[in-house]
Length: 615
Image (cartoon, rainbow, N blue to C red; front, side):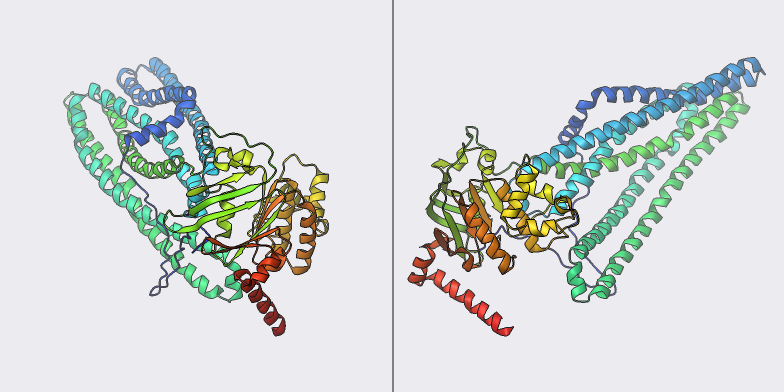
């Protein structure tokens, strides 16, 4: 029976016939349009109503200025150039330049404002996601790799940003431009306008059909890229193993396979993508030639002026691009639906462990702990704890021992309320911990894990994480108490030495000593050590144990340890097997009983003796 949450299997690379296939978790890239979800997305724009209104007005000004150009050209040709009225032409030229200047100014500030809005929306959404993720319970993270959660905060949010800002505003601009062009050309010459629309069905067909093929090709490119990222991530994390087993050439061959596959897929996509633009231009050219042909006949018969014909074709040249853009926006909308679904999935996930409506602040505790008929399951199917009952008096040291998966860590998880009990209750100083606020409960706990996490930053900042208002003197006292001061003093900048990601510059033992200092600085009423001395050498462990005996006086402590020699002085030893408590007592009493604890200890001593003999 497992003591840990269910693990998620990581797919392994498979070698194919000359080409590597690397299985990656390809998530759905598109979803059908969902009106409710779209309205929820738009709600993120509400705080930016004022700049959006300004952007909309600038969009109208920009569109009007762009549409005014060809009409001014028509006026100049028909009313001034043909009649040879050069005096009036100067005025039109000045107006034409002014219109283009207005168009440039409005476009510049529209892009500037919408960029500010976009970054604001991006920051708000990431802030909301990050804040929510920090409040989610451990159960949420049990079945989700950190990479997937990271993608929600980066790629998916960026996809939504493009839709909520540039996508919507540019679409409104394109729609306004299309409407304006249609109204103008129909009012200029309705018959010629109908002729120009002949190629419109062909353009729509190209935009929908070919866009679908292009979208599918680029989807394959993104999947191949995700395979490369997955392989790179695994390679970087396992580089020591790769070098230790001299598998660099094999690993390089694998990477060459997926790298070539990515290049080939990208080239197939770009070949199709490169056809789209020329086809749109060709379709537009066909429509323009039809207008020129009919327009020239009308011109020769006096049915249209030369200025109207030139302005008409100019408007027609601006007609095709917005249609293509609208088709692209629809594809962007489908991608955003998939991204929003994943983002909202997280935002809609409720923490399993929360403060109850009537939760009270837990006052400073003495440290008594009672487990009463506690049962627990990580997946609501397999029980990892069954009918757990024990009591710990304030200031006592309790050791939890047993085989791997016996349920030791699960007891710690429940005590700190990382998970909720299925049955039974846990009391601290006679108060059911479910009736207290999480902050008031956990702030009185100190936790040191086997897999110590060191943040990127200085040594001082990592120790101060236990109590942010601690002075430099208090930090050094905590480090000295756990015998970490000596190795810190030998570092280049002492306590101000910058540590790499996850404490890359430190040994495993040094990381654990820093975590000891961090926990002790917090001055917890209940201290939890979960396999905390497993990676410390024997000499250092003796020093740490000596320091802990002095510092834990009057402090309730729970020690989970595989090294049974380190818990001889525990006030109470709880022996677990298959999620149940099978023995309780002191070291001496349990040795006299000659039960499971006796067997575990004898097995460890035999292992140590055999190892010593082998040396």
